[in-house]
Image (cartoon, rainbow, N blue to C red; front, side):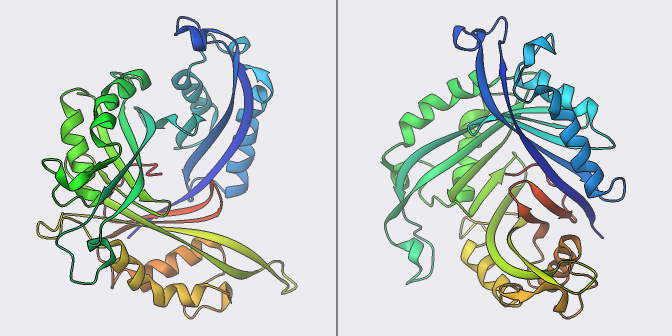
Amino acid sequence: MHASYWLAGSRFEAARQVNGAQDRTAQLHGHSFQLAVRAPTHLIEQSELDAAIASAVEPFNYAAIHQHLTRCDDLALAQHLHTTLPCQTALSLQSSAQRGIMLEGAQALVWIQVQFEAAHQLPKVPAGHKCGRLHGHGFGVRLVADATHSSQLALEAAWAPLHAQLHHQYLNAIPGLENPTSEVLAHWLYQQLQERLPALAWVEVRETHSAGSQFDGQRFRIWKEQRFESALLFDSDGRYSGHSYLIRLMLSGQLDQTMGWLLDFGDVKDRFKPIYRQLDHNPLDKLRGIRQGNSLAVSEWVHAQLSPQLPELSRIDLLEYAHSGVSLMFHDNMRWPLL
């Protein structure tokens, strides 16, 4: 069994003056806001969701937000937009690429995206594995906390000493990071931050642009992304068009205590490869066993093909554009949005 959701979003440009904030935000300034929304497919059609989002952001596009809302910080704006959208929507609002707000049900979360650069190697991988060689990454880290008990400034302050400890360092030499997989690093960061941030919800670590991990104090989750190019039926006359898709495979489970990971990212890619070959540079409506050629049917087809090889699979996102597509969630009720 699975639950299916539409993913949709919109950008809008707006100015605001946040009263009572630091000087830098108390002055009139502007943002390129990014709104992302998730809604159950059985409650609303995708076209209706797109129209509702366009209507919600239209009053603020190229306008002064503080002239419409008494409070216009990220949280207040996200809560206002949430009230204007139909059905059981989850919402993410970014005022920049480095910070944002998530709303789902009664829960509000604040997050920041930070970076550091470091070298590492994985000492427990088999001989010849590329990650056993000394290498490094520009790591991306997202810190997420309860918005009612924390703030972006609190997250930044808690991160500062960790950045000094990690940036331009050899991670294996840091106590607790002798086997610095993405999952081990997420767990280590969570432990370091927990006392400073009692409202901490989870930590995400991204090693590359297409893979990363998450730890929320109890469970580990990882994701691997890949793009494919396909043909799809364009109209009832049988004409075809084309599209560039991004698929995000999300897994959840327990850490392998020997290897220090939930699953090797390379293994995820290898198990997906036979399915990828059927998707890439092919017409989607011709896939054997598929019921239709649309994104929802394709994601269901991928799940049917892949889940026997990846029992840890707990979510599939299939995106046609940056914030437009579908999401399938399975046995694990993953926090949204992961990315």
